[in-house]
Image 1 (cartoon, rainbow over the protein chains, first blue to last red):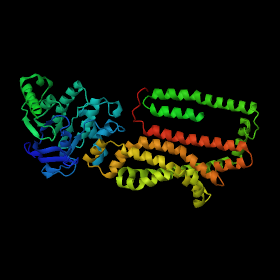
Image 2: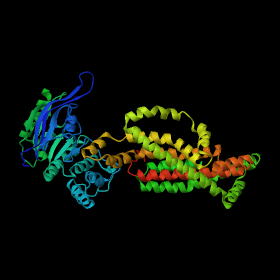
Image 3: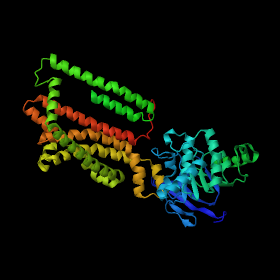
Image 4: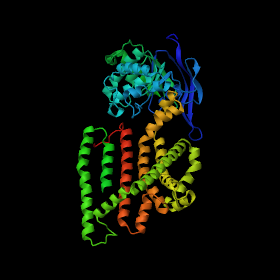
Length: 255
Length: 279
């Protein structure tokens, strides 16, 4: 697959939840493409249906109308080629760091030697050396989220869907995790679709920012972020960054 | 008294699993509190039997009970009756546990099954097991099976409820994670549902362990030719109060051992649990 091909295609997605006579319209006519190796951020007012959209893209929720095409095939149920990072780290509290990370490999039935090797790589990649045997209760929020990211990458999915992965973290940890994520993304060569409610986070991380309107959500802005990579936090002080962030903010406020 | 301090220790230990140092301190603490508790109970009993003026067939002296205990151990009768009761307890607890967890899982997973069965389950709980114990003895005979049945019945409900609560408490996000990985039903069951429901499940087993002893003894009191409940009946019949004491003390030891075993199981399985604030 060439890097320009669309790995994910959303075709006029509608989602209506049963509620009253008319139903609760959550998503309305959402269409977009995600290219391979692209980093796409989805922002929008809170409660607009960002999480719902992500669940549809991952095959966890069937759209009321429309379709998701993933790697050329209609998506009717979850695929292992799609990895998930949830809002809260969503780790299994009875499993240690390594055991949480290797869960996807256990489920896909990889050999123990492969699991051990892959786990070592991942622990190294997300910077958790020395915490292999720690339980989630002993990890800080940032560390738990690193475990969650490592777990999502374990079986080398082509697409990573992230639902406000840093939403529960404090501002400083959040900034650091953002740049960490960029490094991990560049190293793992995957495609990322990430939901966030932070405009600066979206602009800093993404190749493209999609802005959703208030419910029922539709796309009000599809902004390409042509800032050079690798990106660092200093970028946020530049004029270009400020202009892009202002555009996104304007689009959110206009809805 | 002994039982109280034991429970407190286990409650405490199961909560403060994180600090090994804390645990060691608890054990050292127990090393002198338990003998102290036994000693004071003994002194109180001795004093009461000596100075209360009650006749020995109402309140026998500790030494008399000890002699009776020794005699019952010597002729092997105590061991025989204890092993009968223990077999009934373990049989009842296992049977009740297996049925309660299987049905509980089904009820937790299926609204339809729950709607159909829950009225009967709730209704069945309004019948005191003690009241239908004679019926079960008629049905299953005076042997061990009727006691296993009574014990299983009494254990069933708390374990059933705890299973339902436990399975329902599994976070939806973890189900989503398993679904996104295309985990099979079996993988979801073994890797998610069982460990996630374990805390509540073991809580049910703990209650069940205590109740199973009650069930077995009630069955034996109603009609049996062996077991500690039978021994109590015999002792009462011939006014051998010391024998009743021996049987009751043996039951207490049995119940405590069982409870401690389940508590140890809980401690082992739930080492991952967050110690609550304040410990």
